[in-house]
Length: 145
Image 1 (tube, rainbow, N blue to C red):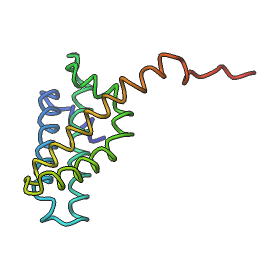
Image 2 (cartoon, rainbow, N blue to C red):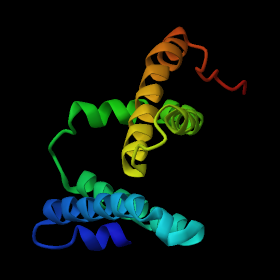
Image 3 (spheres, one colour):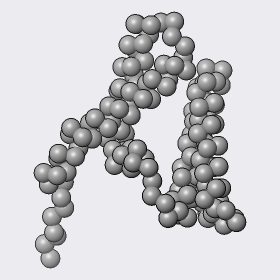
Image 4 (cartoon, rainbow, N blue to C red):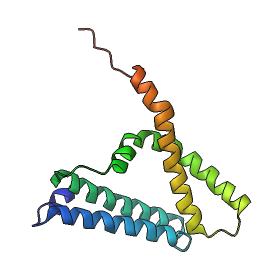
């Protein structure tokens, strides 16, 4: 319902883009103030900003005839692989940064860990997921009537 409301204006594509940019801004602002917000409020702000990003992108997708950039399509194709590997990679990256460069600012570590999680997920997509899909391991078989 919120997506339909966002796309009902005079310029729905701009509204969707503005909503997505607002969500990304809120997400990164939360990253910078995460320690001050505390665990519960930090998680809440991450969840709300992520929802705003999804609403903005979904409303843009419903109204747009323009194709998505290749990087967006790549992340969409690799989304399941990113989902599978991002958490352990982020944890390992954070631990490595704390041992190697303990004075590194927290926002730099967070940005680096996000980039490492995305890169590892895309790598996993090309090396594991795509070959398995192409080999036909996950094709559905017809039901016997």
